Image (cartoon, rainbow, N blue to C red; front, side, top):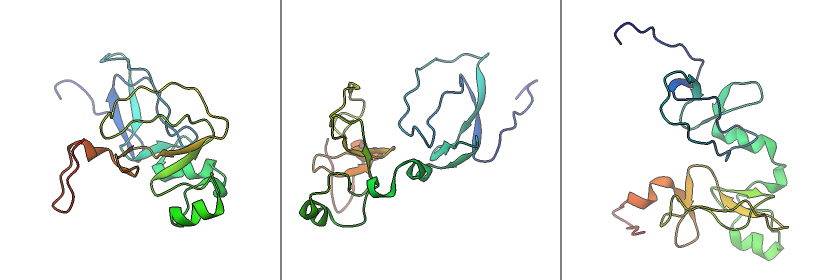
Amino acid sequence: MRGKRRRRCGKNEVYRRGFDGCEATCEEPDKGCPAIGYIDEVAGCACKEGYLRNKHNKCVPEECANEFWPRELLWSVQSSEENSTRGDKRKCGKHEIFKECFNGCEPTCKEPKKYCSDLCREEGGCACRRRYLRSEDGECVPKSCARRTSTKRRWYY
């Protein structure tokens, strides 16, 4: 680090060059920010991987997004069979979150960079949480699914 001072950031933050302050928050966990490229003049403290900025400007574990969804909309620990028996569209599966504005389009293991429009279905729907992708069998799995191989199960997407 010749001639440069270390940048100090808060707890659960990292200093990033090319960071303009746009990042996902607890209120908007899926917020998309435009790529600004590598610009030396633009830099700042961003939340570490696995953390989101809360309303108090602190980086907290990404589960904070649950604070902004009414409890009945959050994914339930009940099985999907129980949910379908009740006919409750607002209960989602493991690693899913209910979105009021959702058209069913989301990145998958096969297409991790899939482009989706912002059009909404009136009733909303369940989408994979941040850092998860939809697998071919319909489950939300970690983003590493595209290159992951397991001794029990092999994913080829």
